[in-house]
Image: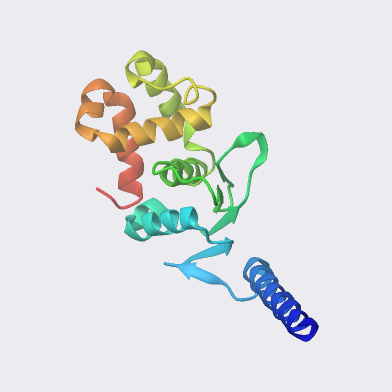
Length: 185
């Protein structure tokens, strides 16, 4: 009986060591994983797989500025996603939201699409948003700063372009110009 217990313990330790090695190997980036041409890092949970599925169905223009996604267990300030100017996204791997990936991609667009400064800092954007502020229908969180204003407006624009263009023609024109530069129109 003691021999069988030792074998079981050895087997469990070997399996645990193997799983730890697989986990650390996957996180170390030694063997990179790519979806499209985007490097994926971190632990791929069931929730993370949903983001990767969404990524596969996105238009090339939506992922134009994305270089890497890091799936992480948590982020500061209870954030569930974070975009960095260099094209890296951080997403909490245990908390899927169908709009989060798009929201973070719009931060990347804000940082990169307007050559030389954030789109949300441009005079045309500030003028359009100021003129149409009441019609934008942003949530309190979306109103919290210019970066969230941009991402929130972009999501609303994508949701119903025709209605958005009626309600906020100046802002829609600004976004249409960005889309033209990205080769969408």
